[in-house]
Length: 477
Image (cartoon, rainbow, N blue to C red; front, top):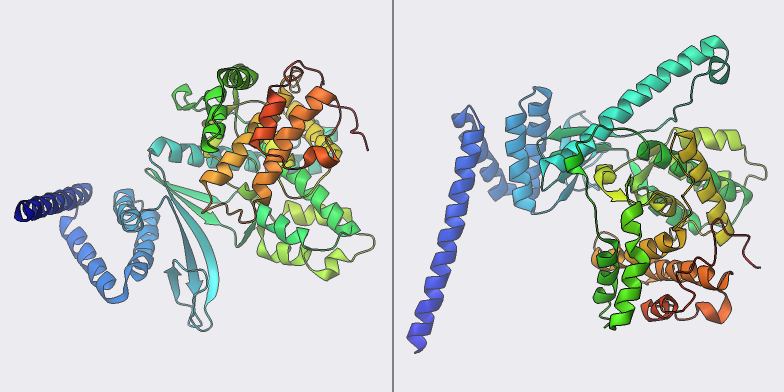
């Protein structure tokens, strides 16, 4: 019996090895079929494997990156695709950060580590390689980049004409915002983004939150949020000419129920029905592209981040607002456009920009910023008369889903002390509370807010009766 069991195990292992060998053979055949010069491919792969065995996987990847850029520069996209296939086969990841350094002899080299321990090495470029399941998703990123680049060039020409005419307003020329976007290269289903050297805006807000509250700090936060809102409104309202087959729609009720399933909260039939009916109406209003304009999809250059976090800036008694705006205008980059084929409700990007955990804002401050977002949408030609119609349900839905997002993406979006998830739960709770009781929750009402407490508000007879119309009046002090 023992021998038979051992034989079965060995047979199973042998079958697994055969499958692996077959897969490797298929990959080699595929790689060879993609290249015209098969001998070149064999020699190149042989060299890479020798590097890998001597120096390890990181060295192998770093050397391949140089080849990728060489092939792209020479328009040999098939070969570049092969090298990208190899890299992502090695790492088994969807995203890969790579860094280009220059040593004291001006020799350039790539590394997967941002803190290379080489004497006098200077970080020159930072790249993000993204591997999409479908090349259509990569196409969306590249297409948005192309359109925004065209618009920026168009804006520069109009600005020049406006200056010659005296002013843009006098010449009747509409202002095109100065939106900074990183260089984006596409190779089949892969996207290569040349990142600026700095940090995402959410991380920057986290650092700024540690600083004392000053007049300069408050002015900076205000201007950064306005920049974020302006970019979101402009990017979201452009026509990118996407084929309708690329558009993605979702069932909001199914996604809401998934939140409670994740929390292992067993819902009664009436609770399921009330939750579903509350957000199902969002399916009808969800015909706007999603910019996904949260602060982590913006980058600030290291030079400006260091300046804004310095005591010299923060301690200014009378900060120069014009100077801050100009510095922000030249240092904030917009990233990550692939969700512009995902259909959502009109206020989604307004919520993304104004209601995140950081910077810390009062309800009224968030509301004023969102009104500014609505104003910018209108200026770009979007009909906003129904913007606030389902605002309670939309806010409730988005924050509940963000709680789930943090739960399911803990590696990339860590929340070790639960404060970000708790923020979204409180915001979801507050949206329902205002609609029922026509005021802000406070004190004991905000104690121990969780999904169970939110569910009790959902089942309140006043929930969903449109007791409050947005924009709400100033919250009670």
